[in-house]
Length: 389
Image (cartoon, rainbow, N blue to C red; front, side, top):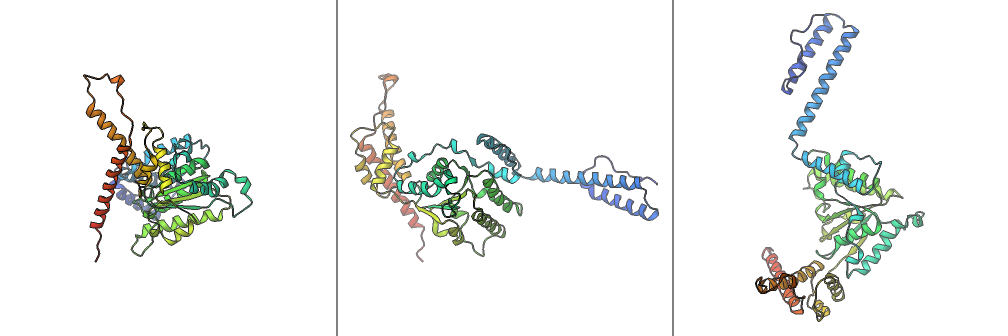
């Protein structure tokens, strides 16, 4: 057989792949019609085509990875996921590339610093969570023959911001000994078509492999809000995939995977999502006794004057959330620090003998007035942007 005058070089630029493919096809066409190819020639031709295909595949793959702006983040996420899997003691579990991306958001329950003792004023809700969620997980054998007493597949925590919804979710995971997947909606978004659905599937497949586990979605209304015809096609498909996989948990009798969501706007959630979250807890702003309990917890290890009347402080903080009370106490403590800085003098005082004075009643009252003023200003700013037309 006459050899080709322009044989393919062992290495050639990717841009010339089409030209070389054309030469190979022309060569095959000419030889096939001039005379039948021998067995060795066919094997050699197949070998060359295989090499060409492999080089083309890896070249394209390298180029896609090179132009992918998220490549570095994906590699770091994979390393973090491997480290977390070792930390929580998961062995001999094979994860896909997509499951590795989700595993980067795992939280080891043993590393969580939040317990029930860190939450004040929500005793009724905590007791309900212990009975409906934690007990069926910790006493699985006791309830394994009852479908009615299985842990719920969906739990919704709703109420005003700053009232402890995220704290309750973390404390629930810690007390139940569950692996905690802190899922961010941005994790499921990908620029490549179809990748978001694969990531959504990986959330549930990973949770099942690591069960008992809790998939926690903070601000769930931003992710699974009411669907409309204006939704992007990829977003609509991803939501449908997520809800379909969620339904799969209901059909698996022994599955111990819980989807827990927190929101300030339950009215914005899709009705299909509300149906999948039958266990709901309304975490409202704390009442008088609850505020007093929260203040005691916040100031428990602080330097506070013995004459401070926390009951009186609680009466003055009507409408404050738990986070508002914490910020108010921090402002009161900073007043003591500012006074110390203003009055201290390096020339006349020994640094070893200097101490910041305790938090007094008047410090807390001043902090309350500051907090009320900032809350009123924020409310006025909201009203300024409300259209009454």
